[in-house]
Length: 295
Image (cartoon, rainbow, N blue to C red; front, side):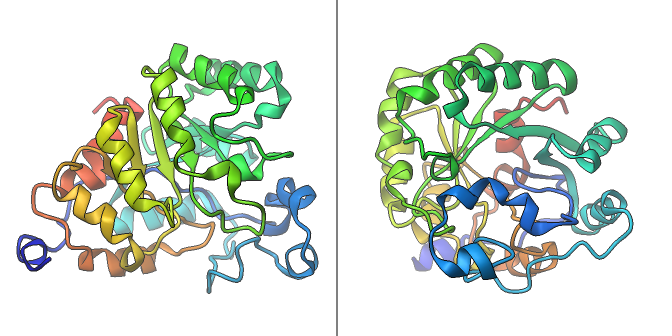
């Protein structure tokens, strides 16, 4: 561990960061997470929480601006974020994608319970805005759909056909819904059956982060993003992997405005003990490769 820290450096400047999980500030946080309502049972989640992971995050960013797009662009410029992967559903999101295609990259979430309608949604979005990624939340589907469930297979097949990566939530979910659908070992079968599919783990993989590393060593099509974690809480096993055999497999993902401010993220980022040669890959190069970004 001592060697790890000695070889580390402060985050370099002017690197053109690619954020693989970001969005514009929400004007109505509660309605944004209505899709989870059918799966929530405890009274706090159903009646009190404005944000389903409110018990885990403090000072969740609020939409305190008349123009969330301009506000977000200003924050990106301030923190050196060149481009960000955002949703492609809301009015402000579509405006961002249309007016600033050099800054924002489109993604959509799909529920495989919808069958071919989910596949058609992927195709339609790809044809209209140039879809760059699919966001998958197995525990957030209604009902939940395990990572290796056959209902996902048409989605995976279409992503292979279009060369679109799947950003997959793995590990214990933050919202108070069952975790079984997001067990990390379920990725093993999918990576085997779909070697053409690029999968990027989201949201930590805890408490199976060491297994996540083993699977990344095994499968060339499996990656990891640091979304939903403040930098000081990045799992140790992931940082050690990035500093060794996993330099090309781990990439930055934020969580603004879902749960973290960019000010907090980038005030803590210099404390992450990454090696000199790893920082550019972590902040930019790996995302450029996975998302197929023209530079």
